[in-house]
Amino acid sequence: MKTFDPRIALSALVQMRVRKRPFVLSHGINARCNLRCPFCEYWRSPGPEMTSEEIFAMLDDARSFGIGVYNAWTAEPLLRRDLPAILGHARSLGMVTSLITNGLLLSQRVGELSDLDLLSVSLDGIESYREIRGASVEPVLEGIRAAREAGHQVLINCVISRKNLGELADLVGLAERLGALISFEPLHRTAGIEGDFWEDMGIEDADLPAYRRSIDRLIEMKRGKSPIINSATYLKMVRDRNMHFRCHAPQIILPVASDGTVEICRVQKGNLGHISEGIARVWESSKKLRNKVVGECEGCLFFGYVENSLLYDLRPEVIRRYRWM
Image 1 (tube, rainbow, N blue to C red):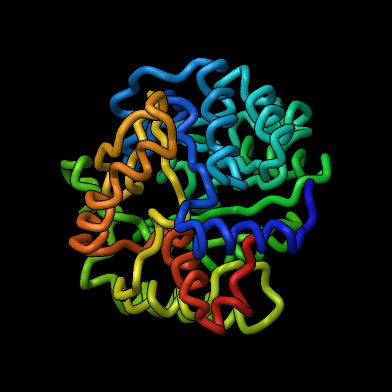
Image 2: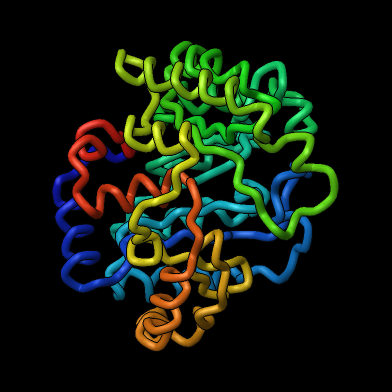
């Protein structure tokens, strides 16, 4: 795993603020998943996936465009047998490699991840995990332990919902025992998921006192030596459900879906073009649309978007306290 390199920060600064281009390629590497999480829309309508050769070509193009970080995620990257070759190709181009996984297959495949720099595992509860994700938590914990033994720094990411409000502090303690970092973000209400799900897991007005107490406890733990990577600024925004910030997500992260569609972000999935057109061409031709969509967006609290947008705006507390692995 790479340690922090100031040259990467300098490259990111030049790419985003001088060249006005994103630095991270966030790739929905496949459309399949081995879980059926009720709050996730990605597994519900699996579609085509790019071939290894198409992904290699995309990575070559992305590096020429100035991309410095390749993030493989959704639906479940470890289901792709060619994942090690893809990470290896990105690493050979000089990119930092990142992976977001549900962790169920991690213990089986961690030995193949020698070209991985940053590893994030989704873990939303301990006692509540089965109810939230529909599976046992033990394989996930086993995978995290195996990854730590293999020398990987692990980031646990927890999505806050009604189901796990009483376990947030316990998850911080679990991360400490596992030698992992941990991040939190609230459940995002997605229009594509209907039914009674939101009544079951969403934070409603009646839940707000318990919700705020739980987040205040995280803020208190953040002041100590806890492994929470979120900034206090962001955690206060989560507590207050305050989505008022200047979003720079499209200027930081370039999302590409499993079929090669270039999107705006996880919230505003608008089609900007296809990777086969060339990243530079798609980027230049979509400027007006990107500005329009971002200007009209009602906001979100995805921590990667908020924290990095606050970093982009040089917010002092975020610069000091947000730990991006």
